[in-house]
Amino acid sequence: MKSYRVLIAKPGLDGHDRGAKVIARALRDAGFEVIYTGIRRTPEEIAAAAVQEDVAAVGLSSMSGAHVRLFPAVLEALRKAGAEDIPVVGGGIIPKEDISLLQGEGIASVFTPGTPVATIIEAFTEACQKQHQTRN
Amino acid sequence: MQSAQLLEQLHLGDPRSVARAISLLEDQADIGRRIMQGLDQQRLDKALTVGITGPPGAGKSTLTSALVRQLRQRGIRVGVIAVDPSSALTHGALLGDRIRMMEHALDPDVVARSMATRGRLGGLCAAAGATMRIMAASGCRVVLIETVGIGQSEMDIASLADITVLVLAPGFGDEIQAMKAGILEVVDLLVINKADMPGASKLRFDLGREAVQSDRVLETAAAENQGIEDLLDRILALETEFRKGEKFIQRRQQSWNKETVDRCLDLFREHLTELMQEQPCIEADPGAAAEALLERIIHAPGR
Image (cartoon, rainbow over all chains, first blue to last red; front, side, top):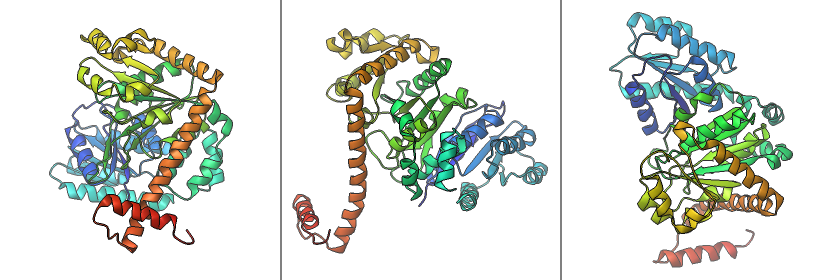
């Protein structure tokens, strides 16, 4: 099986990265090559890292409520870096009404606590497959 | 993307093209060979590759990041390859060296890449050599290669890089004893990192008289940005020294030879497995079976 490369990142000031680490490990155990950038990153830093690492998808994690501003900001930063083809998946403490809003902005999927890990891995796999098809 | 276009963009330093070229080489795509053949040889000759190796927790990533800071202060464009292990079971990997590199994330003249070993032993990944050349061709004057955390036997880096630095830290006394007949013999510089911590002088003592007397031992406290300027000066002075004599060219040639043999063995391994499936070995002892298999290949008609 092909090992897809993905980037897991936490934009903004919130320092709670347990969720991001759990997802990073689950992806690794599912055969992904996971680049973890650590906490408190700006959207521009995340986009630059995603480009340099040539990842097939970016996963964002947020706990403290800034997702409506920060997730689309990462999309914008990717666009500016000429990497709008890299899909972005998000997760964290996200109210139901924000999910469709984020998806409307272009976030591929949004996951909240309690989502089975298998569902999240499936979403990453699908996003990566699609990205590889469009880029080749 | 066509190789010609990719090559052109790569030489202009376009981050996406550099990253894509590395992936193509890593995934052994057909286009990879054309990319490698099109790289600017002058830039490859001019570039210096520096291996950073050492046991887990010695501070390789922090030291690498500090060296990048120092190189950037001198206006030098730098590439960083950070290797972490792949799981043998799932082939997945968690690549976390970038966490210590993020201060350079927005600097277009720092080209960083995290890579998984993908089954390769020896502390590196198979595509490390190709990656280092792509980075050099994109204009990186220096490429730093950080290995996985090593034990006694991973020393591929010493044959790949032009100059190899072994990073140690206080508290690694027993490991040093075990390394004495291994990596300690083949590296160019020894760095006692975390030198501001208790036990640094004991580490110096443990390294033995030869290391203490020789001028290849340096002390740093990478997290405090101490000793980094001296370390870079030493690295660049060594480069000048090696380039004056035959050593630099010799090492490049050895590196090229080893990479070729390694690649050949990788290809050979697949071939052997196929061959064994086609015609199983009947010998009871693996040693005898191996000899018979080799005989079969050497004397096979048309091969």
